[in-house]
Image (tube, helix red, strand yellow):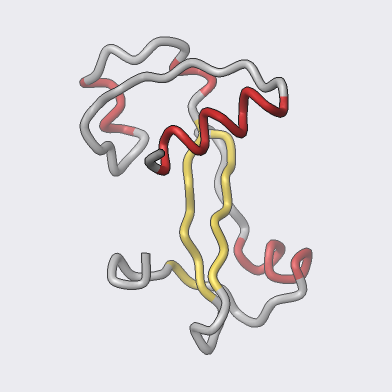
Length: 90
């Protein structure tokens, strides 16, 4: 079973309703306009962050119309300074 199927199996086991939309990678919210994706108002954005020394990583999921306040977020999760992690770390 591949990773996608593991996720789908877990969602079903938890009773979570979901829809799958297959599309090429989209790296910005603005780039969504070029794709026919249903329910665009439900889209969330993923922020891959790391702490100051790079030993902890966080995947933050927020509504597409929101901006993350990294200073506030680090306080809430008890982290050192947060920054965006590199593609290599991902």
